[in-house]
Image 1 (spheres, rainbow, N blue to C red):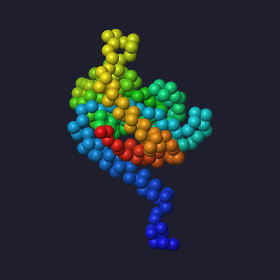
Image 2: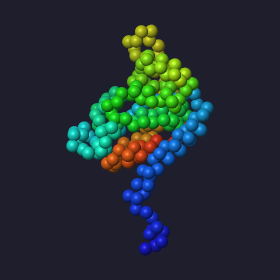
Image 3: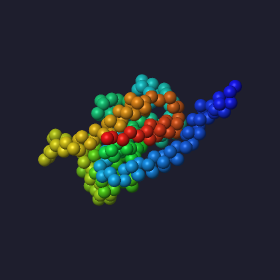
Image 4: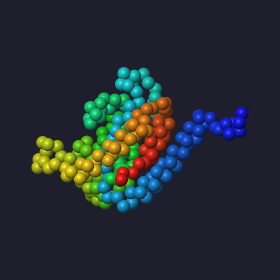
Length: 214
């Protein structure tokens, strides 16, 4: 056998080594995003559904169920009108298209609860979200604790309704473009992982693949 082929490691060994580097990759991603977003004042927050398997198989599957705390669950995505079984990927990106923060939660978790976890990562900026993040309590808390202004479109039946400015609505589409890239180019919805740590590592790899907007 040629030396160039005999020296290659097995795919299973490569995957195990890659999984052990999860926290290192996470630290590198955080350092790079802080560097790239150092002059950014506008950020966008959103979530997408990640299906593990079809709902009809949810009661029989053992995928990612090794730990109750990280096991998948049933959820609903209002924007796609989709009932699914798996996880939600919550993420924050800058207006230039760099992911700054992300978290994988059970599908049943409400989007707005993710805002509790970003207080320590952002300050003195504008955070743009959709109607799923509409909450006067959270808006006041973010502004009081970190000087973050949460900009969310109002509902039509709200008192003193005002349409969200066009510039904010246009900026909010950036994160949809990033998610679409993960869907179509990086196949983030395709899953062969059987354990949560492997699955989480795979999602991090997809998130760290950056493409800046021009």
